[in-house]
Length: 421
Image 1 (tube, rainbow, N blue to C red):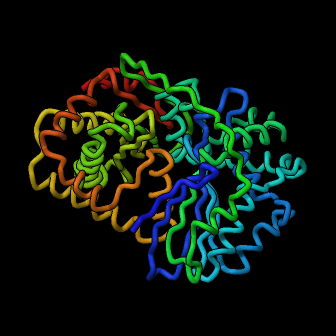
Image 2 (cartoon, rainbow, N blue to C red):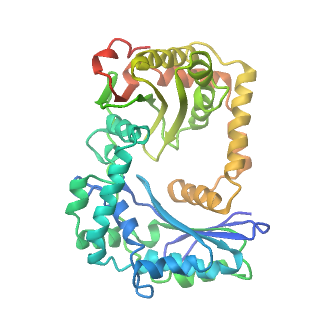
Image 3 (cartoon, rainbow, N blue to C red):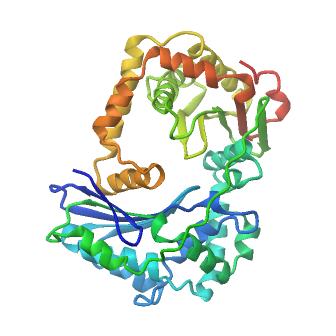
């Protein structure tokens, strides 16, 4: 049974037991990410995440930080998104308290050494270079830039080479003090806790000195699209990498589950409409998929595909045909049932491991202040009807909501006449 508790210091604790796993994951989440940044400090959330592994008061250097987990075979890492940052350790159950100590130490006691900062700037710049050198990944950065433009939601989470280079220790420390506070933190413990009978007491112990001040807030995302939008980055590639999609709903919208079903029918299965059409029937692409992504204040549905540069226009045209088809006629019941069962099956499989459970339930608790059970989500998925899919499709698949991002040896002129449904 999932348990939640708000501790006296404002930290939200969520416990997800799994007595038969023999593994436990400790995850510390803070509700701050790139949407909380400004033009000058873009990339600071991600930079701070890197610096948390550079030394604490008791573990004074990167090696000692890493060795604590390496000595017990722990799996550990961190991640940054637009709305949250997380730090976790996954260990055998007897090492639960050591993992809790380690996560709390880097979360609360990192020294942010200036000497390490200068070296880490080069590391992050190489990370930016790496992503840009892989157009299949970089197209997603181009896509969000197209959707949201020159505001935090449209900026790269890693920042730019210029902003990363300009950051100093004072910037990071101030940002940390104003964001890493109790009321903005969720601790998720998932798995088997070994002989530790009172998890709440231990979390209170290790996170006792977290700040109680108010957290900084983010500006609302501005969306005002009135016509189809397009961005093309001309680059010498063997493939044109394409993102084609529409603005949709945020994570609180009552039709969010319908959007998941819609995306699955279109392109999240090997028997989905777009996979069958684009890959199996036409042989245009090796990979094609459709996803629905949402945050607290934004959402979109997007199809991503990689095709021969000379076939990019054809691929876009065929995807648009499927968008039009699904917004014109109700999906058959057997196809609807297949999509619903596919989503439920994948959800169940994705929550097998303790770290997956920690991330899933922890992020839900952080952003939505709720912890839906898998049974509750199954009921929501099963309640989606063919009428719902048709209604949502009609709402989102409109010319004024269309967006197209392309990287490859193509030009804008090739697509101008087809960006309409």
